[in-house]
Length: 154
Picture 1 (cartoon, rainbow, N blue to C red):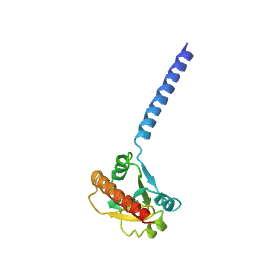
Picture 2: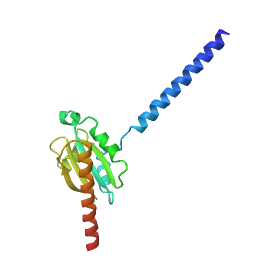
Picture 3: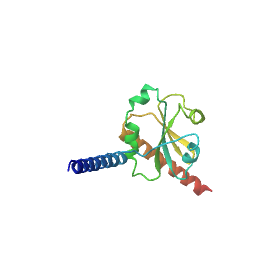
Picture 4: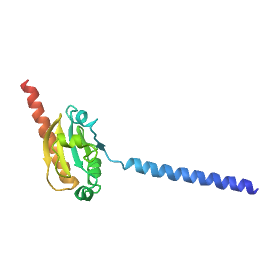
């Protein structure tokens, strides 16, 4: 009888553990942002994607200004999830020095917009989600219109 109680208790414990883990996992998955980490292997191909604007943060882990951003970049990634043709990325310049050197990064954090492989804007405004979202939407629209005009001329 004691053995049976132990087995039920053990089974109940495993069920509760599994349920708790699944709830935690589903919460974790749902809160992941849409920020894509870019590396020297992926950066060029990603920013050259046709008709896609990339808003990229360049940072280093030791920078206090980068640390002070907190969850801002992840929050922006979440806010941009529904926007077609706009991607939010980040580059760790501590690890990806060649990428950061190539796009002329000398201070941190630096925020740049790329469209069809070309840098089209550098963000220097307020560091809040709404301001950054408005900026990248406007810059992406301008870049798309310019690319459309260039295509018409050909």
